Amino acid sequence: MNELEEARLGIASVDKDIAALFEERMRLVGKILDYKKGNGLPILDARQEERVIANNIGNIKDPAIQEYYVLFLKDMMKISRAFQGRLMHGMRIAYCGVPGAFAHIASGKAFPEATTIPFPDFEDAYKACENGDADVAVLPVENSFAGDVGGVMDLCFSGSLYINLMLELDVSQNLLGLPGAGSSDIRTVVSHPQALAQCAKFITDRGLESKEFANTAMAAKYVAETGDKSIGAIASRETAELYGLEILEPGINASVNNTTRFAVFSRALNKSSLPGRSGEHFILVFTVRNEAGALAKILNIIGSHGFNMSSLHSRPVAGPLWNHYFFAELEGCVDTENGQDLLRQLKTVCDRLKFIGSYNSLAL
Image 1: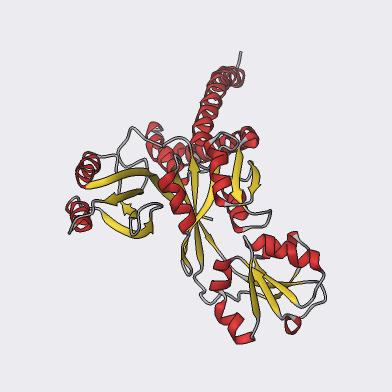
Image 2: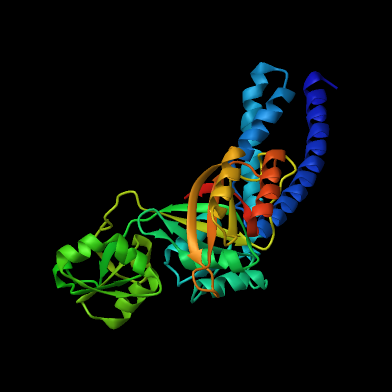
């Protein structure tokens, strides 16, 4: 046997070992997907992939081979994502609206292999996840121009689901009309209240009448079905394509920086055994005792633990008049000794305290 044959036999032996390890790795990849599906997490986790490369590159001692090992790892993770994509076909995403709604667009970008299921309102989509008819629910919580979505925050307060991921979708609103219509033909525009608010200046300047719809896609569908060239919809480019409408005027929202945040709700709480890995932010909802300085005590406790509060919203509680709860988003990791001490101290001063979840944000 010459050197070439010996080398080929050696490679064949190594390839056999690699095949067994590859099969075992893909089984573990499947388990990871099961966890992601249960916790409403996307397939791609770019930061984790960077950590995999950083943690493993030291295993290669030959510098000339290291760069090729990085390529090997990247290809391996790409293959793993493709395998997870095939397995994810059974994942069900609940959202509010009809195909073409921004929640539908966000769901498709974050979970491209999953099945999306439309529901007529936020509560129905939320309950579909609660009762197991859907694996996760994707619902809007805030728009950078029009503000928070109170109805979804109320579901956080009253419901049982957790938020493990936030999706950030850049929203460009467009004036849509029937084929052959011009912008000068439009007398009435229909859309979701927040979309109408985002485009209020355009509507006022044109002297248009506005009517509210449950969401932007339903408004576009209505325009397509009426056949009336005097009615236009305010919605996305994707929605125009879906319902056979034309973009009469693009980008009519007043603010160029127009982003909607969608929360991904699931029945399971994403917790990591490693501090700092569960999320860069976390959400608390709480009520305060009816006494002077109650809210100030809570804010002081948060500040003394070094957590920055990125947002604080007040919402009325159904029942006694003037009772409110607070929806707070904090920066930092709660899965630390300091974070857990924060929760313990808050429980002593809050009338009710509820942890909604830790999350990272994903820009779509």
